[in-house]
Length: 162
Image 1 (cartoon, helix red, strand yellow):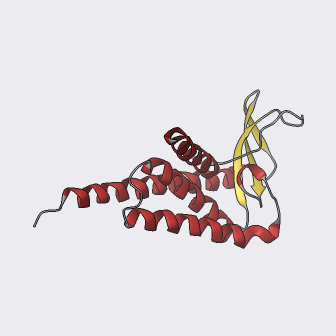
Image 2 (cartoon, rainbow, N blue to C red; image 1 turned 135 degrees about the vertical axis):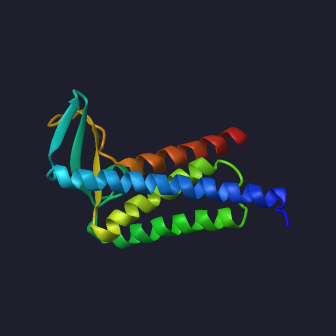
């Protein structure tokens, strides 16, 4: 019994999507755990004049927006819903392109959801800016970066198509 070409392509797509998401979640959990173990909250280690490794706890969404404690479980539900929708879309062969981008979005959503479930906040540690000045970019983490990059790639391809 041989597999049809479309079945093997669908399996490849599923493997690419889930492998990408898994690598993002693994890298995100590892780096956040490392930061929490070596750096006290609200402290930073200068790396470059404009970049620090920091330890911030974020109750909001990507880049520290909407920091309200009551949103915790709503954000978990949205993240898990996004991940399930992406996974089911891939399983039912609706996602046939840009699987790497979809995997980034899925992995980013799951990475931050895990923090919210088990810690109550999201650990952010990549900080571009000059501490104690008005010159900064909100701190973020690997999950945030994956979500934003994946979403931008998907938006770019949707816009380019029109």
